[in-house]
Amino acid sequence: MRLATVTLARDEADIIERFVRHNLHFVDRLYVVDDGSTDATPDILRLLAAEGVPLVVVSDGVHGAYHQGVRTTALMHRAMADEVFDFILPLDADEFIALPDRAALEAELSALPAGAVGAFSMTHYIPQPQDDLTETDPLARLTYVLDIPRQVNKVVVPRALAAHPETLISDGNHGVSHWHKDVAPVLLPKADLAHFPVRSTDQLVAKCLASYVRWRARPDYQATTAIRHMDGARLLAAEPALAVSDPAALLAAYIPESVGPLRRQPFTERRGALRYPHLAQAFPYRRIMSALDTLVETGRAGARELEVARRTLEKRNAPFREALAARLRKLKRSFMKRMPG
Image (cartoon, rainbow, N blue to C red; front, side):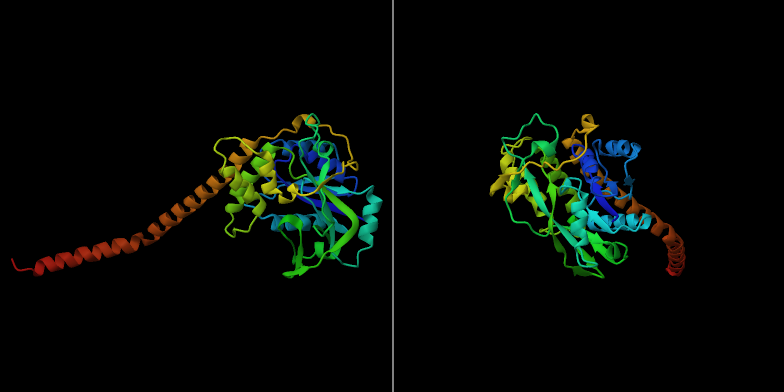
């Protein structure tokens, strides 16, 4: 069985090396688009690729407003053009396959009905006050998870659908449609993804604010879009200073379930030794400024296009205006001649 993952990653320097090294224990190749990171994410990806690991770093030339589903689908089609994989696993950079080994994953995928879309359940890791902050690896530092039932979450796309041009992965990788019709996924019996969405307060602040800008920049934005990011941003808007007075409240705004029951479940399945922990630094202000810069540049590009269109229109209309002015001058002279002295 041949397996590949497809991922869009932005500002994930604190976790991207672990993502690559761990998930390569379960798949044959990783395809990653660096989505305009402001931290060392692209440097870490280049270093990993230089090691010779089966990692393909792709530039799709698109940044700014989120269009994750369309771009992830394009990356899936790129992977299938390279090789006919049996399954494509769309993963975010903070998601890790949680199984004892690859054989267990292949067994669950092989048991799916022919052509069926599979689905991972998710185990969500949540920061807690008792976390060991001296531990720099978030997969070791975070040990508490939401105590919720297993459920359909992130999809696994089989070969026939992955290769078809009319297949589309949804934003968030939660669904698949074919010819604009949703395909019902089948929950894998035991395969989960360990999810580490929040690794620090600084990271969460930057994530909420940058996401607020990028999602609001989408022309199809609606009030229900990316509601967790928006709720986090609204809570930050109520802060009277450049500080987070209640990190727990911010976490609850972004992950409301975090105020519910938790259980301790260290992620013991993690794989791979880290070589670049010195590059795992976050730059929250830089991340927010990057989102604003993208919005500003998009606006400036639009203004330049309008100016070019205005000048082109003026140039095209110039002969007409000159002819009209000449005709009016001629009429004026004719009129003046007929006027009584």
